[in-house]
Length: 62
Image 1 (tube, rainbow, N blue to C red):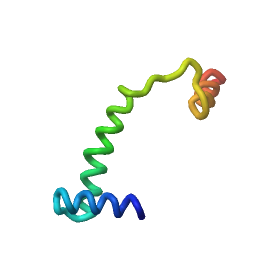
Image 2 (cartoon, helix red, strand yellow):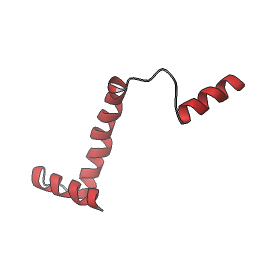
Image 3 (cartoon, helix red, strand yellow):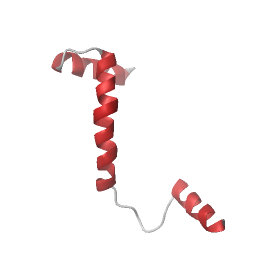
Image 4 (tube, rainbow, N blue to C red):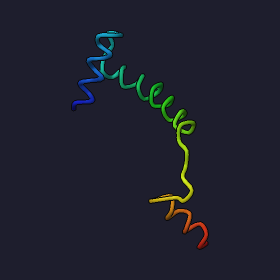
């Protein structure tokens, strides 16, 4: 509920658009840009951990 209110306030004051339109812009533009940029910012460690470790182990077991 807090994120919804924040998104509504930001978009209403800046672009004067509805929450539905603001969410569409966020989903199509902002989330896509963050997902694309995450690969540039992420530096993997030496050993995989968590789910990545389990996947690596299961890949070798097959």
